[in-house]
Length: 397
Ligand SMILES: [Fe+2]
Image (cartoon, rainbow, N blue to C red; front, side, top):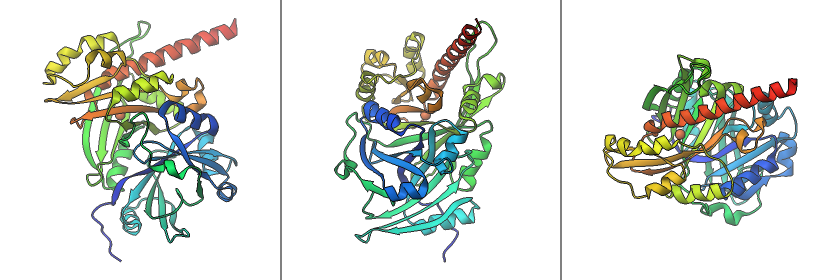
């Protein structure tokens, strides 16, 4: 048995598994806002065995989004949701050779949730998978080797197989650009990526936002490190709060809302962010809004970035609240949606949110936009806290 493999052998995402209390409403939201299409669902046998029910939507770039609700409280979705609001519970990766990946993980002392499972389909297709615990509280990573397996996954049945390779109607076709986690102390997570997965540091940043309440001196900071797997290009960012005002940090508020560390956002790539965002806005999903000041300062920032022009009309960028960052003629356009709890006006839907990103040669993470974004998120959190306070006062009177 050959050991000491040089890399973990990832080559992309297979799917994202999202645990939810309300399967119907959650899949409806993703169909309606993102144009995702249902392609498969769990079989009655799988549901009985696992105490959960799942529906798979074809998202973007042949990526499956598995939405799962518990039937039994003791199921893995039931146990997760007993601890946390709705959110992403598993990242499922495609690997070239599962045996090699499992040996790599054993060598690096990863904690296995279960041993290698092998399934065969009637057409001689083969599916092998294994899963590990991570340093991100209750989030797990699954590794999948699949060769001509005839269903979406073992225990699933196609409901609309023809749509499995469909391109996304909104142009959300470039798959997952990056996944970002929040933790009170990020180093256990970044070291887990390094030690167990063999990832390397790609990028790092720290900053503090301005004060924006008059009642208290606040403003908050964050530290962020991006780790990547050089071979596949898969990138994970991790944030932690930065002192002073540690407790005011939106990262700390996320951790309180999520009841622990977890996946804060997933960035979906597109070739045409204006098309995607204007469509999603028409479908009444809500985005963070950058201030007018952000766009007033943009020409000066572009000079500093040595970015003479972009292909997209600036007035349309501003109208859609899209953010711009870049350097030396290369740029990226990005926008952040509001948290799912705000999209649904229900705390149970949690603090997870989506980012949409279009890259025009720039490989960074929008460093220049982080501060603008944080100011926006914190303004929303301050507004929420004020509303909560008003509600509490109303309920007392
Ligand atoms: Fe991001």
